[in-house]
Amino acid sequence: MFRVPEPSRVTTGPMATRPNEGLFGAFLLPSPESGWALQLICDNGTLPEAHGWEHVSVTARRYERTRVPTWREMAFVKAECWGPEDVVVQFHPRASEYVNVHQDVLHLWRHRDQPFPTPPENLVG
Image (cartoon, rainbow, N blue to C red; front, side, top):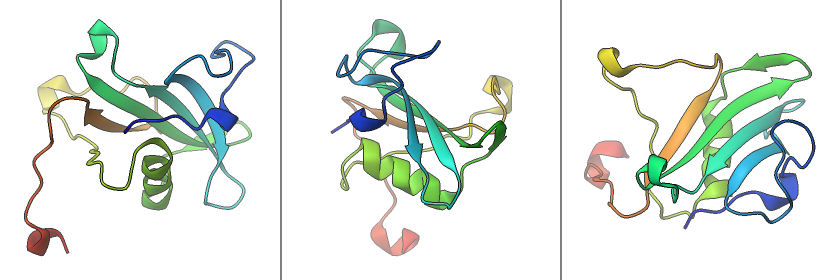
């Protein structure tokens, strides 16, 4: 079940949304990595152009410096925005479809209606 970290919602500035406006918006929350914050843009996938894909983009930020989030940070965001039994993925697209609009951003995806296949437990353990 998709959710947003409501207490961390950005409510001022160009990415602002109103408190409790919905399951979308920009959020800034403390990182599990000391001294860093995580900047999230969340979307619950209900708009027609999302085609049913829930999506969270994540960048790590310290003042004006950014970096690619760590595995620990991405696992933290997954736990903030989805349940423990939800399967969420990071895609590595075809080279012909690759888009990199913002440096240092990783993305988490989950389709609202289509379960994502996973390998057998003995292959990923």
